[in-house]
Length: 58
Image (cartoon, rainbow, N blue to C red; front, side, top):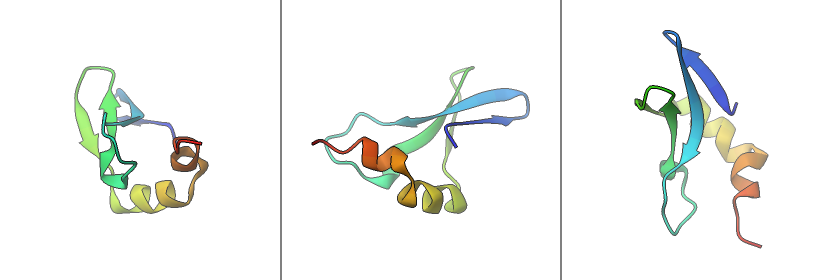
């Protein structure tokens, strides 16, 4: 779930620069500079994935 393609644009899962690790800080960044917010199902998947856990400070 780290990349997806929408209408021919490749999007990469990206976290906004913020001090707290909140699900609202995640979004899709397109190779053309456009952005998409996560859909509800993507937010749920991210919540249980290793992506957000790997981003936690040790």
